[in-house]
Image 1 (cartoon, rainbow, N blue to C red):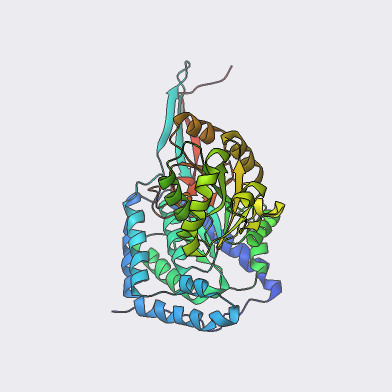
Image 2 (image 1 turned 30 degrees about the horizontal axis):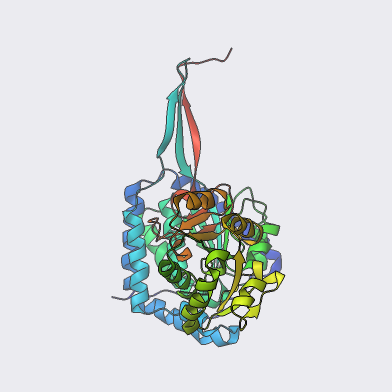
Length: 434
């Protein structure tokens, strides 16, 4: 039987004078819940995940009604057709959300894992143990499924989470959070461990970003402008990536059939995502053969190529690339092309213009592949595989919270382990330092 939820039809932001206090109280509750989460058993967390999955399906009608409210407002927000498709929920997508929660339940619990241990000559026992980060503030785009994914990962890894989704999915996200918190209360999970920012006032984000004593980590998942705002204003660490200017380099020793398939998949399988390829580098020794071929293979997808002088000499009909093109994340049917002398020039180009996200080499030469993977300074480096595989699910992490191009503390797809840190536990027998 469908469960009913109280969903406000006209969310009104609180008065400005009250907003900072409301954000502080929310963060304080999350911090208190985080202390409880640290000792929550794996059994309780998994029981909640499975109960929440069932709850999503039982509340199908309520969630779909809430989603319909969001869809009715989508034209007023100027959402594109693809954005509306990402926003839309149906029974199949709700089943996928539920399955995602079950998949997280099936993953090993990282909390309490011993990462190393040793005994000092004086008898002190030292252990390095994985622990939750604490309170995470998650700001994300208007995709309702992300609400459940993020909550599931946060609770399984023993954290509290404050959720701030896009206004375009407000009602859908609230309906999902209502299910998650109601099942949490029944299963012994602190309800304050999962809170949603109720106001649509953007000032709330700024207020929460000031609370470094309560919030341990902020994760912005959205457009570059959002990420830069959060990075500029945050008083706590930020786990993020700004953009995804991903490259595919086709080496002189590549299997050209394989190279064509990988380039097409990297670029055209889904263009509006951060791990889609935006730049193609081709070794000069094979450019005369490979460039016309790949242009033809990309043509059915409507891809516009923008090339350097050497590329234009081979294909005069393509557009000339500007300096700005080398660093662009197009998120659409455009791809820059540069002809390079060798792998070293390809590496130099990637390290200069890339976003440290995902870069790939296509080659049959093991030494060239090793040189590329060693010298390219990116979070994920692919060998003979599509850039589209930079994804937590594809890596076997289950659901992911996002992809990081930082070097501390997490890099690449971020799943359960990346929402933990560690502490040292030192055990003595009345030891004194002399």
